[in-house]
Image (cartoon, rainbow, N blue to C red; front, side):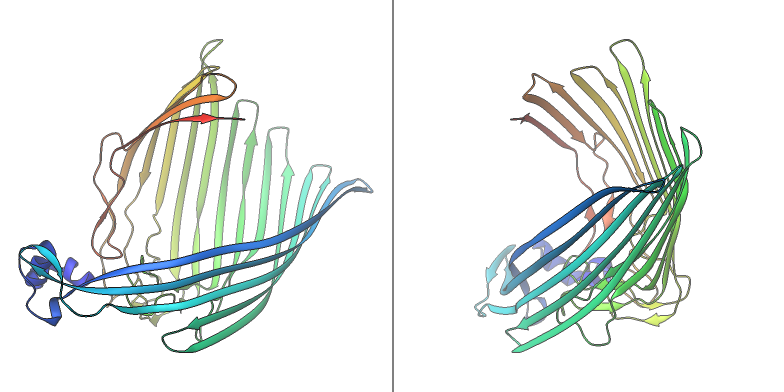
Length: 401
């Protein structure tokens, strides 16, 4: 399907069938309509103990807890087969069939401890999370039952130094981890990374701001085969991406200008600059990766993102304009893969929002997203170009008890 939509001139008949301009001729141009029925649940219980004390010159808060959690998804996807006849989809007599029927469960037990200590101008945070995860994947069509388990230790630390009453420096390091989904092949590794940040923070009554550099060092980045990512077979299969570096800078500021005694002008600005690089070469059958070389960038990671929000606020109302900008993004990494070399469109959008506090309980609000009704391609997955949100108007009422 993706090849048909990205190369319409080479697949003229199939495009005409999709549009209803031509009838189905045989098995190659039958239309498949899939009901992706699924049921989810997520449940768990958590307990936490907090201890607040002083040790010498340090003010210390210790949080410890245990969490039991379980997620489950049951899928039963059914395919129905249609012919295009005189611009109408007609059931062609082929019996519908179940193409996916599975039951996946993940159960996790986690224990954590966080220590926050304030010593003079230093604010220290230390944390450790230990988690044991068990997965079970039942495939009723293949008559298989696969189980997997893993135990992981996730440490983290952060330090903030108060230079002055307004200025401070921060640094942090945390272990990142994404476990394998139930039923994965034995050669698929969990996603693991070390994430570092360092920066400067400024705060007064009217102005807050920060500039933070980040570096995410993946020892293994995973890709997941989902319908939304363009996969039609082997849904939920995961792929190793190997070592990847993601780094950049985040900057934000929030300012409140007192225009008159009753009016203020709130301004919020946020900017992110990101870069990514695969650190190894490999060939992959994942829909978003192909023949990847060292230095190739990750798909769907914009280089620059900017948002600027400016408003006018009184005691009982506020009106704001929001400007959003996102650079184009690559649709695939590497070569010899679908959507190779294609990019999404650059996004420039303006939104409007307003609210009015009628009384202590009732607030009226409204918003207009994409005021200028810009039309851009935000992705070509799962099948063909997908536009961004069109102009949308929302009005509502909030009641607080």
